[in-house]
Image (tube, rainbow, N blue to C red; front, top):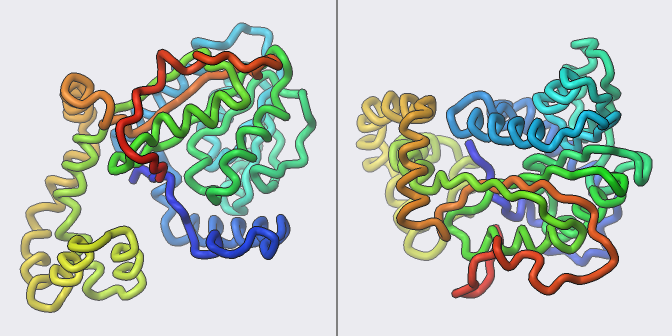
Length: 324
């Protein structure tokens, strides 16, 4: 299931001075360890067509920008190590970083050559400055607090050497305004953008949501924690509709509909052909609003401020900025 860039907990509303780095580190570790145990599928991009397409596009981009002179790379938020293993196969030594215990333990048990595992807190790692030829930060931002977005880009800039490259990706909230522009504005604070690859899966994601709705209503009707999580994502009339659909009688109706919608949902999730066709439609009719994922290749910026650095990438802002 693709992630959106959203606030992940209520602690972000507390005064910043009351939350230390040590507290953030402990909280992040506990949260991600719990997610790896309770919802491991969200960390496996190979589980559905959208994830597999993201891996393919990212891997193709890495290979495109390899010069053959790269010696070492840092994989921030390595997770299951899919991209770390790809770099190893290309002859590059990898320092794999994650705060969660579960994926790092699995990587260690594989006894891979040319990989060193670090359990460290992003964006405050203890890796060496100006050291890496490649720094990967793939879909990490979605797990950070909002006040750490800027720090994440500063950290990746600190790690990469002057001739090196960073590859950073993020899911984009398809219901947000200016998510892509806000992301790229953060990127250019530290990097010159060499290439930006966008995925336009907005239509396909909405189609999945439609067929996923019956199962969501049924689960929320019997799971109070899940109910509260889903209710928090909705506003105004949508909250009222969600409460109605999860009440006793409607949930019984949805449990029947679920028998038919679930097989269709599983078929769609695995169907790359339909994914690509839906993306073509999105690109043609709603290029600006359908971007659901962005991958950028960047190089550490020189000490000047080009006025038009993102002129050809950023779309004109029409509404109030929201990045979630």
